[in-house]
Amino acid sequence: MFRSKASSLSKLIPSMFGQSQLAYKFIHPVIASHGHHCHRSVIYKQRYRTLRLRRRTISTRTKVMSEGELPAVLILDIGGTHGVLEDLAELLKKHFHLITMKEFLGNKEEMRKKIQSVFVFECRPTIDRELLESLPNLKIIANSGVGVDHLDLKMISSFGVKVTNTPHAVADPTADIGMALMLASARRLVEGCHIAVSPDTKHFAVDWLGVEVTRATLGIIGMGSIGYKVAQRARAFNMRILYHNRNRRRKEEEEAVGAHYCAKMEDLLQQSDFVMLVVNLTPETHKLIGKKELGLMKPTATLINISRGAVIDQDALVEALQNKVIRAAALDVTYPEPLPRDHPLLNLNNVIITPHIGTATVQAIRMMAEEAIANMLAVLNGQPIPSEVFPK
Image (cartoon, rainbow, N blue to C red; front, side):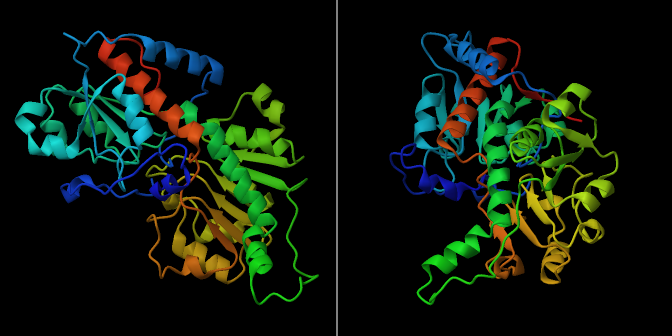
């Protein structure tokens, strides 16, 4: 989730202030990871059960409290360019004593033994070996968001520290943005808006045409929680739904959304009018879509990416868009984020790029914080952990 979205959440953010001058190494850039991006390949429980569990966990007084002192959690900062949103910081303060990275670096000897949790917001603070070695009582790193490719899970686990994410909060809004990008690209909404408001427009061209989503074929690569919710939405458009996944869904799940399994990704690419990427970023999915895969797609097809930027070979994508190998692309993620201002993708009229806003809703941001709080309290209390991420 690209951080610039915060400016649009005025109801959520009452005030912002300048970024503290922290050690540069802890200002971790938002890398094209989603996810993106580590989507857990499990079937999550129904949303209302998750909310009930989370709220019950949050309402439990933590056992680690002594003499009224709240357990300490390390964050990068509050507000500013990269810090935790102020409303979320207030939510965290109900359960934890917040220590910013600036405070920690300024007084390590006093702070290091107090910190038992780290709250990672927008991939920050950076979790490296030096930080882990300086926190002897650290028990959990709670990531806000589902993607954890910015975290070295094996290294963190070697310190006996658990990692959690927030899968339940992200599925619906990310599926929504996937549908929004598909519709916007199909009907050329961004171009159309520019035409409608341009001072040079004298009339609307009758041959300015888009394509229809209804009854088109959608190929979903990655049928986890988010991919399945995309399929649920696509069914309402009477789309033919194909999917490719490491593991095939149960027959009743396929039938519920009318999805057809493609064991080979190549078969999906050749048949789809729209291809949507909803995979984790792993060594296996890095540049999953390259020149060969783009060449298999229909010249009328659109590629949509709501996972991580590095899942696509961007140089190959630029070439495919310039040479009309595919019709268009719609990307909520790129690599890096943001792209350099002279990147060729920014100058093509058959691509839509949004600033990693898949989970940029007031509701999702708060739900992710609640889920992270539930995870932290569960670990500190020795209770079952709602959303633990295990190293592979």
